[in-house]
Length: 461
Image (tube, rainbow, N blue to C red; front, side):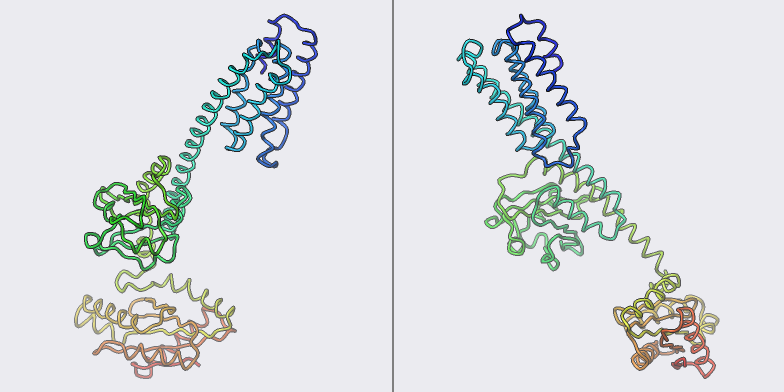
């Protein structure tokens, strides 16, 4: 626009040209200030159409000042279209193109000859067609670049968060966001079956596929190692119809997940409305996501194994002392909040040192593992069984009052393997005491049980 204003001095002056040029320059200055100062992010999206609209008004003024159709400034309307294609949405682009065509056509209709002769219709038509092609092409390319950047950002964020427990759920959510699919699921291969390890649809929780034994697009993607798209899922014989019934699928994309050169799972994308093809941007994003998913899942599994190993006693597979020390105060806080009882039991294998001395440490280790396994089978799902140290174990019993806790302690004592006995110290929590005091009472009860002859449950007073 600055160049266009400067070029006005190259043309012979017309009556009133100076005033029109001055108006155009003033409007241009006002437009520049508005672009720099107005807080556009706080305004509705349609407000940004004021920028190309103001620009086109200045173009119209300059055309009038410089001889109308002979000025050569008509091509400047294309810049407004490019602006909207780069920074606006489809609606703003259509509005800008309409205003651009109006900028070319209205002078022909209203002013006409001699400055806007009928021959200008041809130029207006050509510019309108060029503006349409340029505008929609640029907008499509910009949208593809934005989608690609968004996909890369989402995948990079997913890779950074791979250590989270819900890495698989996040993978499905990102796939849904990038593809617009109604349902996404991650099927992983385990014991010869494909089953969902994460999904945006809870109905798929019990879904299973047996590759090679039933038609399945997931099995095709798994065997071929490449994506497989089914446009008409209800009529396709290459897809398991149970998937169609459970998800209402019309079109489905199966994208293989590859880890260390082998396919370990399939990312499934389901659309409830039919699609003839998958857009290239979606296909590319899913391929990139599936490629990253293999490495991401490997990191997530490794992180989970490390956490499990750090929180688990390597011999018995039970929680170790640090986990116990963390969980007891939390259980007490939950008991206070829910006004519920709580008890703990300390278990000590009797004469364990003699087992080691007479039969060796390997026999002692076998006894510890067998006892831990037997006791694990007796406790409830919300209880915590931990190896407290050496041959001593601890059980956290939330929701257990005195009688129910005593019955549980007797069950644990009775479950101990034949040939071995265990002494148990049981303490029911008094809300006035701390976690340390509760454990200390249970420890004293255990000492009393051993002093009284072992192989018994002693309840702390």
